[in-house]
Length: 388
Picture (spheres, rainbow, N blue to C red):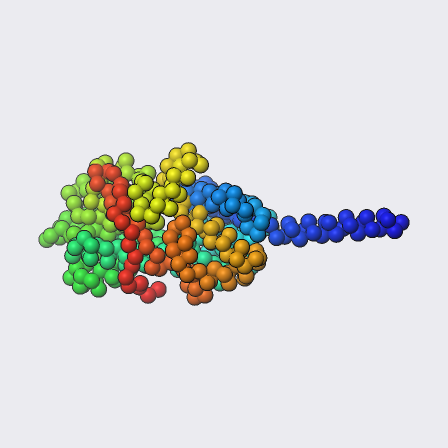
């Protein structure tokens, strides 16, 4: 009887240890748009995250264990993000990557916050952080406001352009922040007269003829049209501007990253986009070029956009913080993330503080297009970060 009792105690103890180990498994959740209209935006971010898990596991994992991935498809419906967060947390997720937009990511991130789970996104809205969600929410992107200011500084200081027209796709928060910060910084640099016009459209508009007419009716064509949009509306607007004879430089933000849409605007030139790194093998940072080589090798095709850097860096940041904290507990991991100062993630040097969980001054790549061919112009950092 005594022997049986001791055996039973041993079994129960083993089960308890097993349960404790299960509770401490490094599980990373992906509550993303695996389908629906937002899927092309999230696809490479997801792929980058999975590549990071593979690399980190090959190097020993997190706290000596391999990272496991659990997934939920929000079907491009923001409200489903909360359901997804609940589901992957039930599957023991200790950190979750949400879609690359505040409106899409916030519903699930609130649930993660309530359950002491780290929430990551590649949203460019600083609200995906302490003020908008809570102390466990982090974005691996650069703030959209900083991106707009960076493009204004580069256009004025490096290219010598002096007049600009702002064309805003008034659909999502990112485009509004981007155009707003560009216009503000441009007027600081070029004066109020340097901003020769502002206009809006919606991504679903089949025609921007009225907006194009207002540009062509100016006494002189602007040096720049600063376009804040995304596919398919953005490429459509570019095509209509060029067809109308507008040859001004067109500058835009990361939402028009990649060359997957270039076929709809044949022979495009004098176009510039800010993003996280050149996927064309010519980035000034060798680590970025190596990343895209590994990406292509793993997935059998080149990356569509630079967003894989964001997904990779989210997992990379969490793994580094968890290993340093010696814990998967959300509060303990966040305490380490908040000490990141120019942390060398693949996306670039990354800084978080207790007050701000998004990059502002991290250098970004600017990619130019000449005759339909994309090439890196260099990496630049914003000099004056706007208030937000």
